[in-house]
Length: 114
Length: 114
Image 1 (tube, rainbow over the protein chains, first blue to last red):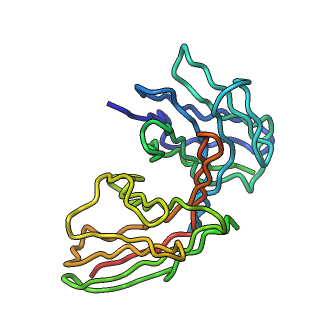
Image 2: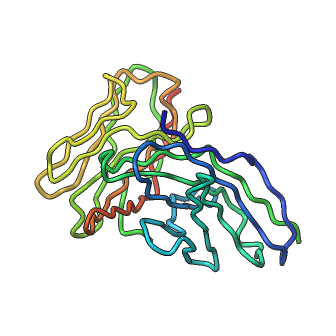
């Protein structure tokens, strides 16, 4: 079955510290991978995406993610977290062959300590 | 701002009632997706329309229906509402470039069924 797992429900980091949010997927077809962020009361904003090519992708707000096919992972990283990064982060997987619908992980809530 | 608009932002109604949620995609996007976000189920794909035609169905209840109009806006109709239908409903539109499809989400409609 197709699924996306975000093992960490809640993470707290100090402002200025580095961040890594984990995402593992199980998907039969060649996957496309996305990270979205949702601030309280807001919609989903696209942070970055991976379709093919370079496995390290850069996104907005200083985020990056690395696709590791051997580990079925697409972890999100940021070298220095800002207080405004506090939000919920969702990993999603899709495939052109599957009609384009996205399967989302359960989300990781990020809190930032001053 | 993703360019996807949804109305209304909030909706409060009673069990047994019917509501209509509206979505306007980004200019030029032909695909519209509907997702439901609830605490127990997370983000779930409901249905996709492409240029007026239904393309894919997910976990959409029979009480729910959708359509996409010639001007490409879409409506999601929810009928015989139950308490469990309370959720955040997102619309997304997408551009497909050579098989690589990116979905951009609207701000959502928060539905509360009392």
